[in-house]
Image 1 (cartoon, rainbow, N blue to C red):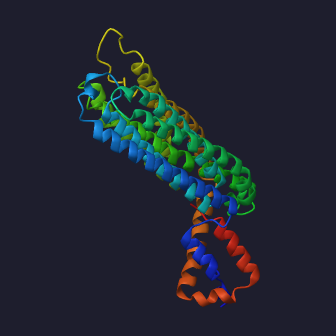
Image 2 (cartoon, one colour; image 1 turned 45 degrees about the vertical axis):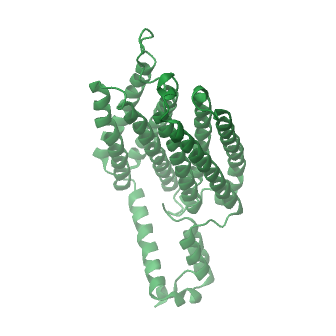
Image 3 (cartoon, helix red, strand yellow; image 1 turned 30 degrees about the vertical axis):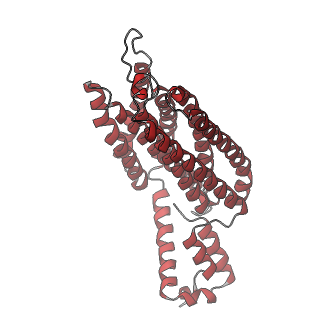
Length: 362
């Protein structure tokens, strides 16, 4: 049976299992990303330990500086952000996804902005932390390494593009229209991944306000925004994969309304009366502003691509992706049943399968 002679070579199987890219430039990118994450996580752990050691002193409450509780939240969020960056960078390289590599690089610049906010926001803690100067040096070190890594990632983008090109979008055939639809499909998936981090990050910060306020508005926001944002994003993923028109329409309506809420929240944060001693945003205003602006920009871009992908529903993309998965599953089953068949595969088929492996779907 001719089809039974098909298969993949042992090195290809091992490479798929490892998930580590062959591209030299992609490896450099991932090693830099890993180095950045390790440095930032170690420094943040040192900062968190120092904050915990000083959080029980009466000086934290005696002087109006950023609270120890807020510092713990924002420093922990920084660690999560670095891990998230490494994950999306690794995934982008494993799938040869040029769009997601670009998105990961932009996300790292967002981390740079966050590190700058962290430095200037925490300057006020110098009055309550005895070794604050050494801690600020550590924060400067974070800024420096993220800056160097961000510039390095930017320089590596071109080399990675030359290695990967748009190969991930070519696996569905020679139809240029189909490739463009799949490119928009992948861009929207990447945007939704970033939305998840920034939505959840904002929700976590909003939840910390509950510890300071008793008004019903904040509690309602926690009850609606936190679970609602996660639900809408997963609904968008489902609607995109299944080409479900009604769900995508609902998601687009929510995306269109979301900036109104964020703009309202931004105005609310900066219109706290000056004649009162109570300001629930005094130690979180800068961080929340950053996340609100990022969310508005992301939601606007997500809405545009959600509409573009919605227009592509019913034009054959879903069927082409399903056919690709079916063929790939059959080949894997054959190799699992008889790995020795890989050695008997024709060279032309081996070349085709190597290309397909490089273009694997997310």
